[in-house]
Image 1 (cartoon, rainbow, N blue to C red):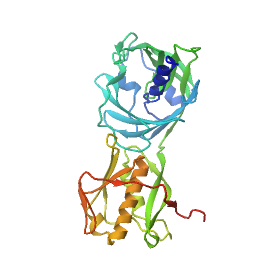
Image 2: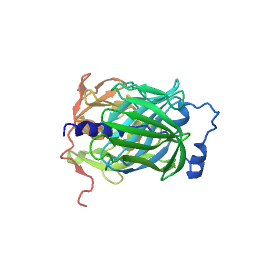
Image 3: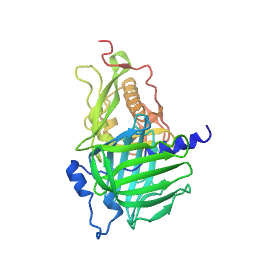
Image 4: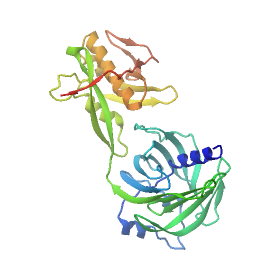
Length: 358
């Protein structure tokens, strides 16, 4: 059992592996993967930075080998990719440039949308120039990674490719990654040195463009006449570079139709930012000053409004701590003051769904 545990951990970490993005059908993708032998190849050729691309991978050999990816954020030299498999969701940030593709951030269990592209917690090289057989480098854990083929013939459900093959030799396993020019990762093969040595594979089977990430978000609303909160579950669509604050603002400015509930956010108020500190476990939402000046509520209703905002925020980020600020400063109205650094305790366990049992 002691030998098996590291193998499982290695495979789970592989779920955060890179996936370059480019849409196209089988013919176009296969054609773009062929390069002249005389052409100078770059690491960026194998890791395109493309918006709004959904990729699906078929898995064999393990229940978590199949996965799908969405592009959260893209810039001139970076990309944030969301990887979802049956067990978890992982967010990774990659930087492309200076002759390499590097993973600089990996966050597990990140079911929420946040921009992590400025975070630099890792420095793992996935692809390195010169793009030729024999190029190699040593990982921080002592594993050896190298280019073992430049034009490997690879067949996956989505098509046939001439692919870059990169092999990682670790203490407990051998992993091969296959990248096609203009497409990105098309196949991954994991072989443990324990057990029967059967490979665990992930192979590209679908690419779709213009596909948003769809999330179901629970929004809480004050039911002032009954001194309680009620909630609804709403689907929101997030395309590449969309900010979650815009979706929150849209939903929180409008109570469910014919519900008799209060909209938590006044029409002229704006959500300036939404964030989450994974170290402290505190989610933060920042409003413009109109959140207070146009609230038009007594102390009881204001408390319900703040609780509804905190519950929505806390439920989305999966935390019991939610802070509300006004233009970056501590919250203070004529009725309620929240000291700087303080937060509201979130508790949605006894809140009922709107029209439950109707």
